[in-house]
Each structure stands twice: as C-alpha cells, then as structure tokens.
Length: 126
Image (cartoon, rainbow, N blue to C red; front, side):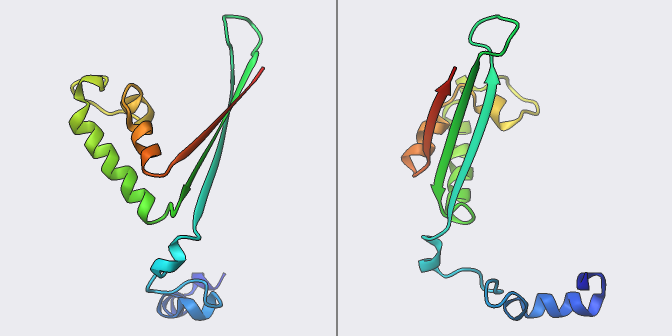
C-alpha cells in the first residue's frame, strides 16, 4: 500500500533492511548464506500410455538444486550456451523461435545439469 506513494518507494529502496527486518539488503546474500538456499520443483503430468480414450498414466518429476538464484541460474545459462554450440545436430532446425523444451529436447543438457548438481526424481503412477 505504501508503495503507491513516491516518498515511501524512495525510503523502501534506500533502506530495504530496515523495512524487511534485516531479511533484504542492498548488498545481497553473503557467500556463506548461499548454501542454505534450495529449490524444489514438482511437476506432474497425466496422459496416455497407449492410445486409449481415458488417461491412464501419471508421471511426477521432482527437480532439486542448491542456490537457484545465483550460482545455479548462471550454470543453466552456461550449459545452455555450451549445448547450443556443441550439439547443433540435435537442434530442431537451422533457426527460428523455440521454447526451451522444444529446442533442447534431443540434447544432453539435462545430463550435463545433473553433473552440475541438479537432481531429478521420477515417479510413475498408473
């Protein structure tokens, strides 16, 4: 509510640690604090194992990594760049606009990210 008024916006940006009880600062987290940041994403999909009229299979993937905001984000970008350079034969076309899933579908990017600390747990339910 206070952010609707310019003077409060200025105060919030100049002194974030004061208004967040020390949780946010202009300097960002210290190196020793980064090890405590974790990410866990659960993705669930339902579909068909064979061509039937009723969805008969559910798959759940759990992705986990440490420090998603700083180190792992840059790791993902670097691995994406390396994959684009090294695996051009696995890319879908010579150019165009693609979603990451469509672009990297036939590459080894997930294996490379797992080598860098990403863990993937797969659970299939029928």
